[in-house]
Structure formats: C-alpha cells, structure tokens
Length: 435
Image 1 (cartoon, rainbow, N blue to C red):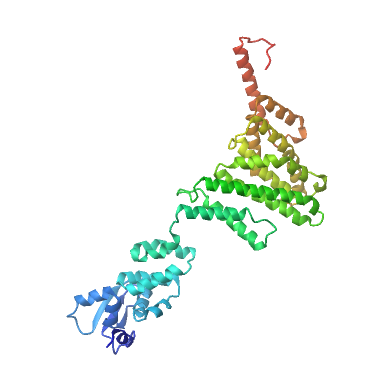
Image 2 (image 1 turned 180 degrees about the vertical axis):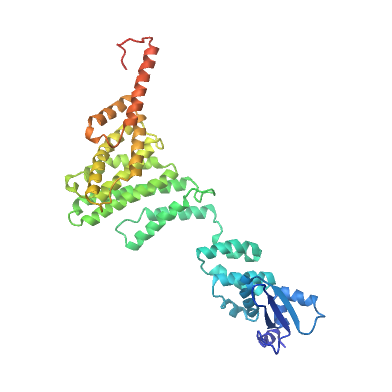
C-alpha cells in the first residue's frame, strides 16, 4: 500500500488500529495514555524512530513513556495529534504565538522535523507583541540553528540601511508643515520620536554614525525649518485678523520644530548652524512679535520663543558653540531685554488665571539664568561691566535673571586684575593707576 494512503487510514487515538501507546508522565497532573501508530510516529519523529529501533523485541503493544513538565503537558499532547496531519493542514492549525512556541520546543525534543518547519514558518510570519518577542528571543537560540530564521526580523541591519532610514526620516520631518493633513502631522511626530530614539545614548553601539551625509541632511533640514518659520512669521501679519488661531498655530509649530531639531543637532555638535540662523533672524522675530497688535495675545508663541532662545543661550554660554565676543554681546543685548520683559508678564498671567499654562517653569528659568551668567562671565571685563551696570540700574528687573553671581565674580576679578597691574608696574599704593 502507498505510504501516504496508508497514513491516511490511521486516526489518532483509534484503539482498534493502534499498536503503540504514548504515556505522558507528569508529577503534577494525572498521567494520560495516547493510542498511536508506530508507522506515524516513526515517519514523523526521529526520537520515536530511534526508540523503535532499540526496542524491536518488545511486546506487541508497546508503551513509550515521555517525561514533561506541567507547563509542557498540553504542548506534547497537541504535538502527538499534529503528527497525523498533512503539511497543508499543519500550517492552518497554529492559532497563537505562545502555543506554537511550546509545540516548537516539544518538536525539537522529539525531533519532529516537519512540525518544526511548520512552527518556524508560522512564527517567522506572524506579528508578535512585546511579551511574545521577549519569550522568542529567550527561547529560540536554545533550539538550535534550524529555529534561527524566526529571529530574522530583529537582527541588526547594516550601517548603510540604518543611515538611509535616518536620512529619510529627517527629510520627512523637515518637509511636513502645519498645512498638511492631520495624518501627516501625526506621522511627523512619530518620526521625530523615532529619530530621537535612534540617537538615544546607551551602552551599545550608536545606531547612526556621524558622517558627512548625515551632517548635510541635518543642515538641509535646518534650512528648511528656518524657511518655514520665516514664512509663518511673514504670514502672521496679513492673516492674523482673519484666522488668529491658524496663523498662531503655524508659528508655534515652526518654533516647536526648531526646538526639536536643536536636540538633534546638539548630539552631532552641529548647533553652530542653528545659532547662526537664529542670530540672523532674531531682530525680525522680535520686531514682529513685539508689535503692539499682539500685546495681549500669542502667549504660547511668546513662551515657546523663550524656550528656543534658551537652547541658543545654553550653547553659547557653555561654549558648545564658539563665537567672537562682539557676536556674543550682540546676542545677549538682543534677547536679554525680551526675557526680562516676558518673565514677569507670564508669571502675572499665570497668577491671574490658573488655567494659563504658558509660563517659564523652574528648570527653564534656572537653565537660562545659568547660561546667561556663564555667557556674561566669558565676555571682556568692560562688556561685563556694561551688562552689570544695566542690570543694577533696572531695579524692577533685578529678580530675573539674577546676575548676582556674575557681579560677585566680576568684582573679585576686577580687584585682582588691578592688584596684578599695580604690582607689575611696581606702583603699589599709587592711586593714579587706572584700569
């Protein structure tokens, strides 16, 4: 009789035609006997084939005992039934990742190649949730090289492939603006999050290496963002009366994008391009947003403007971006008055209305104040004196930013410098010596 036709005549659990019993023994559950056929077991399992070759002289109705744990019991029981299915029916029998993993483990133990291949084919093709993926990563390597194809989706890709994904994401997030459909904006936000994740510092090798292609793409993206921001500012004036919310949102989104890309640029030591463009556009930004027309509006934009400027102040103040002294003092003189003016206004609005959410929180205030102090102390002493004199003369604005630390250091340095000069001139006590 043809082997395939003969196999079809056997039914799992048929006691009449059965010539072997498989006994699944488990210390935690009642043992169970399964009526099987040696032809099927030998054909589908090398484990059973080897058993029969060692026990040819056993009784006519053989009994094979298999030890398994309580958690494995159901998987072994189902595996015995699956031995009777055709390859096509086998593939349709899988119903979950968890169950298939258990059967795969049992099939490896019993050396059931056909079922192993079907399990692998199923697991390699279906989606996994996070918990299932963790179990697969933990289990599959122990099952031998045959099961490794299951892990193909989580294998590390080559450097060029990773870089291409990163560059494509950068192009996408720097192209989509607020006029795009809502779905595109959501995708943009998701892409921004994934870019940040790819650059997340950890103990492993970075996903994206710094090279000229990456730098060029980031610079190109930065230029696009500044162009979009400039357009949003220019459209604010003619469109605000018609649609204030839409025009404000356009500017706010552009500022948010610029704030986001600052975080990316800082990881690549590329903040100099941002600082250069921000300095170039600063006067125009302040001219537009400080117009009397917007005196009691655009609070979200005004607050976000301080946050973005804070990124620039930190880069300049702490030396991440090196600028000549005239550029540093010009940047400080441009933005310090705005910050002095807006801080009490935002605090006052927040005090009047608890629902008013646009304010400088403690961390932002501290970061900006620290950056300004550091920036001032790095200026030539005469420029420091000008800044400090202006700060002291503005008694109503002494609270923020607090330049007391800069004042203390400047005073000490000035006295020390005078003492060094007088000693150098051998004119100790000579009151005519001046700095």
